[in-house]
Amino acid sequence: MGVEPGTMGMAQPLFLLLWVTMMAAMMLPSMAPVALTWVRGIGRQSSGWTRAARSIEFVGGYLLVWTAFGLLAYAALAFTGGLVNDHPTTGRWIGSIAFLLAGLYQLGPLKHVCLRHCRDPLSHLVRYAGFRRPARDLRVGVHHGAYCVGCCAGLMVVLIPLGVMNVAAMAGLALVIFMEKLWSRGLLLTSVMGVAFLVLALLAPFQDWLLPGLQGSMPSMDGM
Image (cartoon, rainbow, N blue to C red):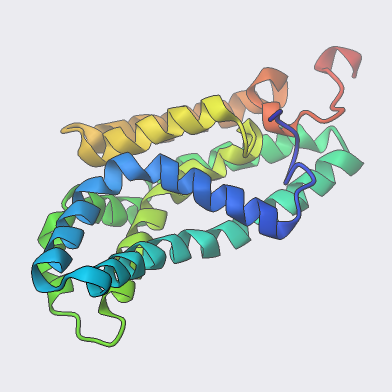
């Protein structure tokens, strides 16, 4: 699939299906320890269809949060894609703003609060065990998913300039997410990525190659 501005002409249901699939693939390596630990706990408390239903409930809660975030992403991409199609030169400034927002978020307090949770999620399993029914596993999935979204929101913003279906960008972001959460120097990497995004924000108006997801029919700087 090529890279085009905005939602690439996809209807919302198809976009959400691809978005959730993409997020599941990108987040699986970093959230696997929590998921496996919780599912093992479910296995010790229940069996058969009950165990399967509770496991699905947990995963469903996690994906529900990413689906909600996908609705916001769809709206943002539809808006920016429309601007680029109507006014191609705005793509440079949209890209610059996206990198700026991503950089500021990476360096901001909300990112670090969520990242601390994601770097030590097993300590929160004790709290999760205290959740009461009904829908305890769903609530655990939603709670952990919300922290995961908060941890990764800034990185997702750069998909606007890079292209939401840019496979190379998705692979790179998945690696960054994995290292931020599990590498011993993940907090340092977060700051490095934040500074890098701020630098890209300065370069974006003058370097079209940084914005494959906003190209459209955008003219080159030489032709202006």
